[in-house]
Length: 173
Image (cartoon, rainbow, N blue to C red; front, side, top):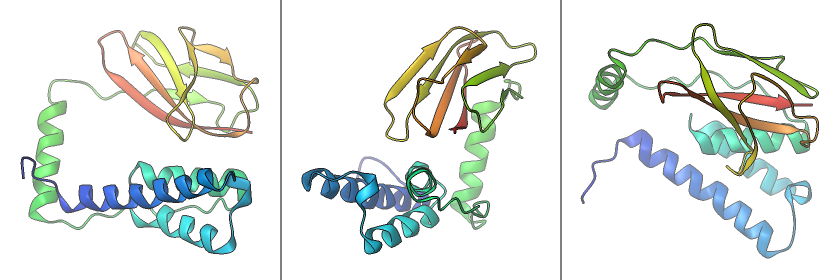
């Protein structure tokens, strides 16, 4: 009652709960992602396609890494509703006055070395997270190695000197 959630936020929350419950079931049964049943793989595919949020991204990462189901998913198309117009206005308002960041992290996919090119933006630090949100690496360098990390999908969070944060998805082969 205290918060007014948009339809997309509610859908993302429900999708995340499906992903979380699948993970919880595996943990309770002392299994890992490599031991999913065909039914669970289908459920993961459904999660991967349901929303544009983080839960879908985590499901896609598991499917691609563990099952070699690396399907390209269509860009998320949100219906133009009053809610989406409000959301767009809020995003525009939040970003007014700040410039767009055209940072690149390459090569992507990588087999171990990464380079962040930031143009005029000074990078304070970069942090890498696995698909479960666990920090696995941190550096203040713009060229660094991640050869010690297992293959998979990672999120790199780049913290800039002006306290803004830019994120990118990285695939480690």
